Image 1 (cartoon, rainbow, N blue to C red):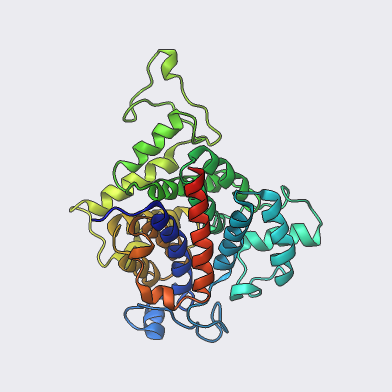
Image 2: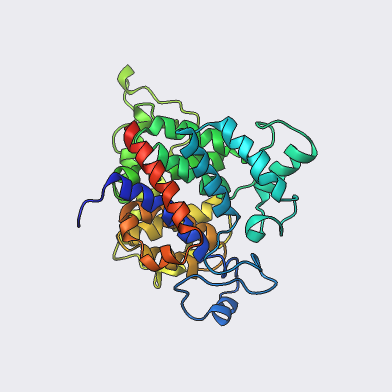
Length: 361
């Protein structure tokens, strides 16, 4: 396999997320898989137009959902500010995004507004609360879907990645477990953009960064999860997050993906194994599984994410980012780039961010 450049991996992660989002636009939130097959056939392999009276109805094949809109907003802020600038991000939310929604679910860019964003809008616009007091307890992957751009930007600076992702996440989602799992996902993505694989060694690499204080997770173990010793050199690390389990999950799932005794076939049935709903504890494991199983096959990974039904949009965004980081932009089929609305503008932003992160390394 030819080694990929840092820019190829970074752009692959970003464009992979945009592609995954748009691929799931039509068949989004079909929890009845028989209905999904009746509407879209046995295998969805490209962009589709949402059916009338469904989520995102009125949009066309290749367009972005609201998750894609927020990812683009975050990416634009990062590029223009050459860093994560929370004041700028919040200003863009106030001026460019919140005026486009009204706090109800079926409204705004992309045709649907998630729970956490509706709650933030209500507190910010109707109650006039300041940023920092508008987050809610939604357990979805909404923050991760926009913060993945932050993860790419700071892929070579894991401490800065964890700090910026945490800060951005709590703007809209404040549940401690959700924040920890979101930061862990972004740490994994950063590791892949660096050039690592999602495999049995991933968690060990992340835990090494906990030991050095780069990732803010608590740990009391040494080595391969062995009991801590008595010397001061092995004092527990008391992190911001109470458990390192969100960092340990990816390698467990990666090993399962390659264990001949564990078989999920077809791979889209990962949605039935880990769950079809929206919560982080369903979505992150499924994305880890598909990216581990198809690390160099972006098309297979993201299409199995889409064809699994349920909250396949989040699953496809997250899987697209992870697999895009490993396969690179060069590994994303050209038809997915060509069919993506405003792909030239998105490619330009992704290229600018990848260049900036390389210059800062």
